[in-house]
Image (tube, rainbow, N blue to C red; front, top):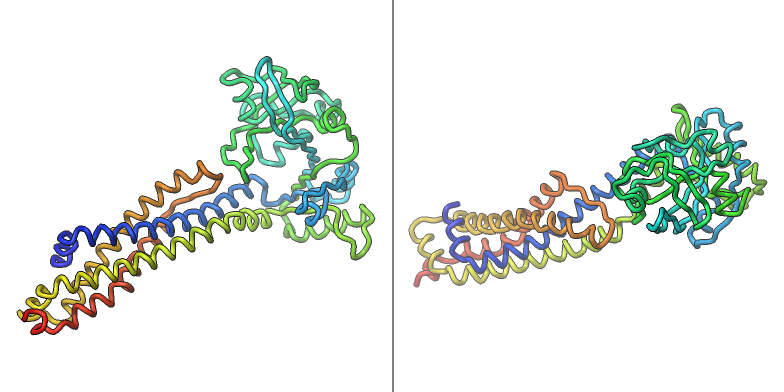
Length: 397
């Protein structure tokens, strides 16, 4: 080990080349592991907010939604019918949405997502009120011009001043009194800032902003604990098909989204980046392995006399073999540590390019370190064997 450490320190250029080539490959592997863990952590965090016993029903089939085709299928009457047909549905909340709507307070202007719903909106999303109060049943029943605002909207329009009781203007014509501010949910989903939204009574939304008193965008349903969610989803699908008078063989005119599907979707969303990083990481490791093997083979030729003298005074083949393997492992292990640091640093820059979840745990370090050791072992064998097989008489003559 002392001889290996001395050799690693003595051949500084060789060590530097091997060290950095291995570290780049390990950095990629580290980012891959952290991104996979981050994707699943983000998915489970979102499902926790979404609610394990809840589903979200959108108007339009999956094919129509995939092509961007809008279809009006869900109505306000569906809300009442579903609530009466499913006693286990403790919350049935309508949702009507319109994006990029202009809002203003005095001279400050902005655009945000406007959502029309009921007094159960915040409760259905397990979203506490940070300041003020929630929409009331009377607000919704009488169509009052009141609203809940997200943390981002509060910061944009009011800065450090409390927005409670103040009136903002929506779409240049709808004055709305702020009753409460939602708790900050800093994590965004698919590039959308969750805090950048305003919730108003569903009636106000449909009459004054959408000019449609019948159709809504979605329904959020929360069930009691009991039977599996798949059972409730199957019953809900059958009920809505019958209610919408869809014939056998005809596609659904709605889409039901469950927490399980959200996990699959959010995890798959990171797949392309993970694959590209995986390919680059593996290629980098293979390249670094060949760099290490070639530099070590060159080093064997440079150290022929040293090896010959060691063999002549009693060193066995395995001693020479072990020394070169130790040198390889020392360099690649150090490269693994450096690669983890580089990967951690790169992960801090990645959110500046895209909203990508990263989560570092002991797994990221352990996998990266294990792969660096494996690289040292696999690509260090050939040079070590070449050094061990040198004949002493040929080496020192």
